[in-house]
Length: 150
Image (cartoon, rainbow, N blue to C red; front, side):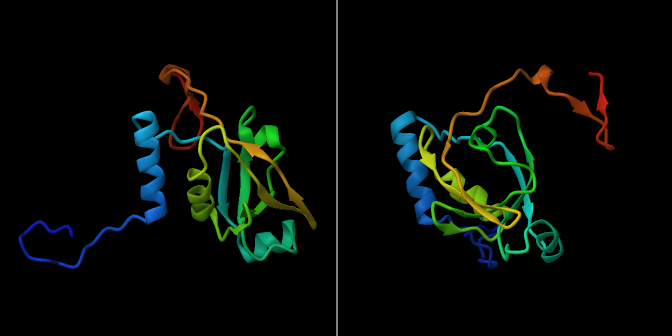
């Protein structure tokens, strides 16, 4: 328990055991945690958006961006796809999707179930290490999202 004084004030922290086990296994095998990058930007699937994009979707994570050249792109994920499950586990939003993908070991395959319009798709994704790029290669943006010179 965390407390700034030697009195318990009701703040506690917990880590799911499956996450702790995964992290421990990676530390023992590689000396650190190695996470893959799927290459999508997910967001919550609202009822209004689901009704327009995929009337059959009742839960999931909406893909709003797919980064070119990433495992998601290579597997065929597209903008406006709705990820409804990962390896058979239902997805209720972007955070659970990130958690499930985060547990996948680098170099392993996993299967997202996707709704694209009214069509159900199942894809095979091989999770790879994120491509590294020098800090000066990352475009800088102002508060309005416009690229600026650095």
